[in-house]
Image 1: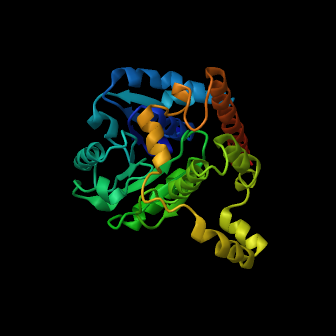
Image 2: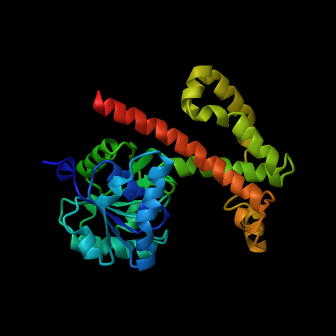
Length: 315
């Protein structure tokens, strides 16, 4: 029996930025992957986009052959044991997708959403069998970032969470169990709490955006990849953390909703690199350099993890 024959079939709903990257992850692990999208042009781009990921990983691109393309959802999910939705981040669309998936698949098939913030209970609202619906939040780009948040809603049976986490771990990802179905889950709550304070610091004239970013990347951000915030608190001692909180907590930003500075920039059309200005001003060359730096860093780390995983498997 071949390696591919032993692997569960994976179906991915959506061939966009996240969908094709998720498909690559599972294909690289030897799974047969079916990817569905109603947009034929988006589907047609998948093979080359996935080959480009393998090129960036300095890896054999032959797993692309494990991916089949489908313009009919029922064909894509037929025989799949794990289906992940990577469609638009809009509740009504996702609700309809899950209601349809629930009708098309058997009761033991895991149905997952790649939503980055929407509570799973909302997405499952129109499905009859909600016990097998969970979140599987891959980070962007999914082929370079190993973490996946597996979110359990009030209706999710723990056995499906456990199966999903094993499947993801076996595919070389790093799954974590999110035990409460709250908006933003864990990662995006932390990320946007930081962004809220960052925007407020700039808005209040404490520093400019360039200084803010430098403080993060060259200061505490340089250790975050190897030392989590609670790990760091334990290392320095919780009494020091408590002392700092007694000084700082009451003074942190408490804007009830998006900060007015962010609202004003979006209203004015200064929405970021694509238009040349957001919190900072960007020439096309500067924007390209940042994107390249970001991709090369993540690709380098992903190559190291992939090489270590292959070496362990061969040992």
